[in-house]
Amino acid sequence: MRPSLIRNLFCVACLVAVFLTEHSTAGQPVCTITCPANITQSNDPNQCGAVVNYPPPTASDNCPGVITVCSPAPGSFFPKGTTTITCTATDGSGNTATCTFTATVNDTQPPTVTCPPNQSVVATGATTVVTFPPPTAADNCPGVTVTCNPPSGSAFPVGTSTVTCTATDASGNTSTCTFAVTVTVPVVPTLSQWGMIALGLLLAAAGWLLARSRLFPGG
Image (cartoon, rainbow, N blue to C red; front, side):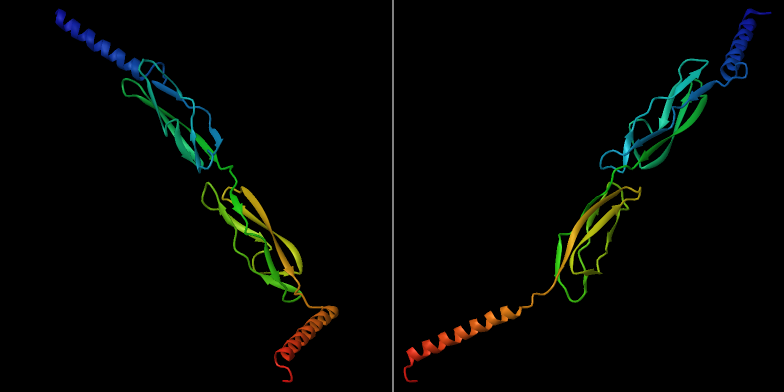
């Protein structure tokens, strides 16, 4: 057999051996990858999400040169809720393996709420209907709602009542504020007060008559 043919056969055998080793070794996969455990964390301050960092996955291969890539990458901004992260390991021959895990960002920041100023009205009866401006609320995520108890437009008794307003965001976080509604009774003069008013009017009339008589004597 010619030496060149022997060399060619030997090279073919080497290629076959490399191929078999690269693609199957005792039935084991060429690339393996193991993702980190699922991650849960709170939102960043005043953000509807958080920057999430996580450890890299571990990958192995029967040949060197494995590259791992995860999407979204560590250090990315993750919105509130659960996001699936997919990691892929690729070796020098293009063989791949993937794994997934989740990153969950919980909104734990309560909303802010500001009540209107204290309200004061004069009673129109045993109870008085009082309307007041709505409180203002803000949150790091959309979806905040505000309720007041008693609500605006309720009938308030004479005296001072406390109104409590609660802001609730989409994650169930709450904040409250309070203000006062005071219903006062109209002031009606008493009998003695009426007497003082009458005396004041009489004195004023007498003073006017005295001044007139001096200005127009005999008039």
